[in-house]
Image (cartoon, rainbow, N blue to C red; front, side):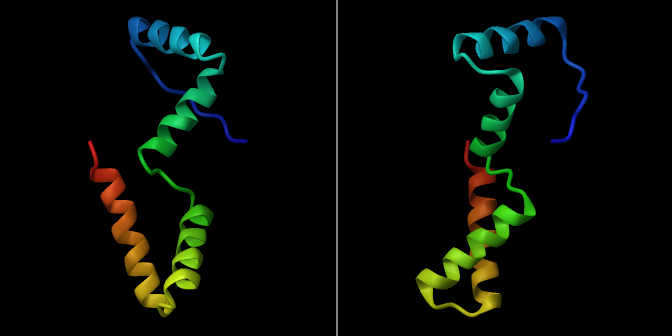
Length: 79
């Protein structure tokens, strides 16, 4: 697992720490869930989406990749 250092205001850090405690999670788990919510995927996860799309839809590789990219972009644009 990689480590990351970020700079937050003291108020933001306290709010994040409190939210994690209320949910019985670590700050790292809360951030990881937030990244999932916003559709941030690892390369492996994105490739898995392409594989699933190909199996379900019988698309060729380029069509499946285009579909996966559209879906990822749609999730990232969602409010």
